[in-house]
Amino acid sequence: LSIILAPAAKVSAQDTVRLTLEAAVEQGLAHNYTLRNQQLAIDLADSEQDKLNARKMPVISAGGDLRTNIVLPVTIIPGSAFNNQGQNEGDRKIRFGTTFNIIGSVEAEYALVDPTLSADRQLAEAGRLLQGTLYEAQKQQQKLVIAEAWYNVFLHQEQTRLSSDKLM
Image 1 (tube, helix red, strand yellow):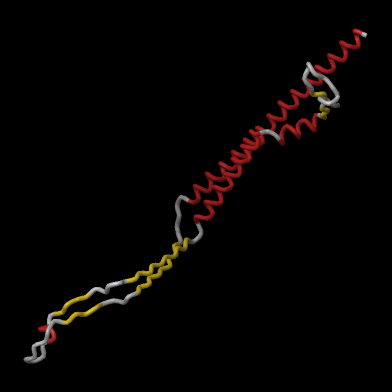
Image 2: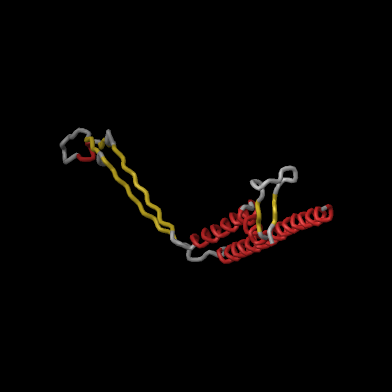
């Protein structure tokens, strides 16, 4: 079976496209934006499951800091603190620290117990199953719409052919 899709006002060999029912369904499903959007929803549900799987992985973070002290802090200690039996010493200036300070850290965290992970995984799996079911339902609905349109055009063509045969 083939179908002729062309505007009623202009029928010419250049405007005629012949499609079998299978080809019309295949082409209609391939170019359907609703199905493409539903496939994206399935991909999002899959990525949600990937996020949940990553929650059980350890988290490692690192940091670092480099500081340059142009002026070192000075502490003045009174000379009486160093007074040796009758000797009178002046106050002492003591500098603490270094000109450069480097600090580094590495942290690792691992959640031994995550009470919500199991429930979240079940929700994500149910969401994925729902999106897959919706996709299949929309795909069947689109097949039905395409087939109905194809048969309507085919019926119209047959009616046109039969009426033109009766006129001749």
